[in-house]
Amino acid sequence: MNKNKTHIILFIVSILTVLSTLGCVSYNSVSGVTTVRGVGSFDLPVIPKTGSHKVMVFSEMHYQQSYRSQEGPRLLPPNDSVPITGKEISYNSLEEYQELSMPKQFISNYNQDHVKEVYRVNCLVCHGQNLDGNGSIVPFIDKGPLPVNLLEASTQNAKAGEVFAFISYGGRQGFSSHIRNRESASPMPSFKYLLSEKERWDLVKYIQSIND
Image (cartoon, rainbow, N blue to C red; front, side):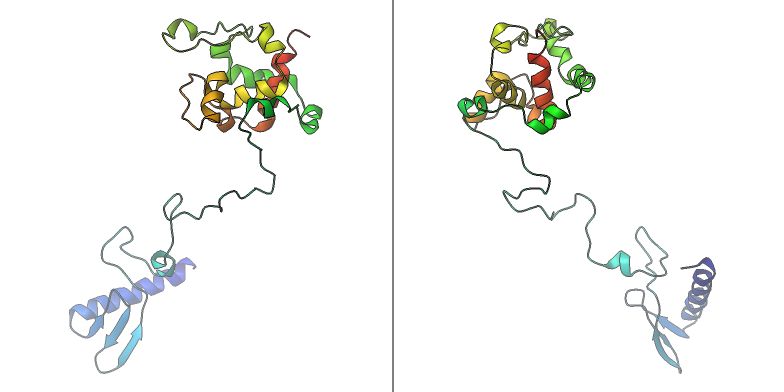
């Protein structure tokens, strides 16, 4: 609505408000019904007297049933629905993960400089600059497993899908909790919820290519 039209309506409403105080006009602030003594009645925009919008010329959008962002009830997708971009498959045994290899589409888009940055942001504090498990947080860990030395033969010789599972679910301890349907007590987060599938596969390739 342009400003001139708004000012005109506000002026008319102001006049009617003054007349209502004199008993000449009756204005219902809830319905907008306005009655002029001896003339008739008509509808005006609702002008609420209280609330966050004390003066509102057109109130239809304000009073309609609607929900703010994140306000319940939410319209969530059906259970087990799959996004149009596809859905990552989750397995319940290490043997199933050991059968996996890095998807071809991720291999063709592998960028080592980008992966180094992903490692720096998410892994370096625990596993260290040299991937030797000697990150800056290690001196402050007083319980639970220490960060794994990613250069050890057990990691370098592990199958790619196995390393992917450990990254996704918070290390060996976290994955063990996952397959038993229990909450993880691992100090390592489940990167399944923090990094994309491609970023986790890229980390697998990066870790296993260090000694190549």
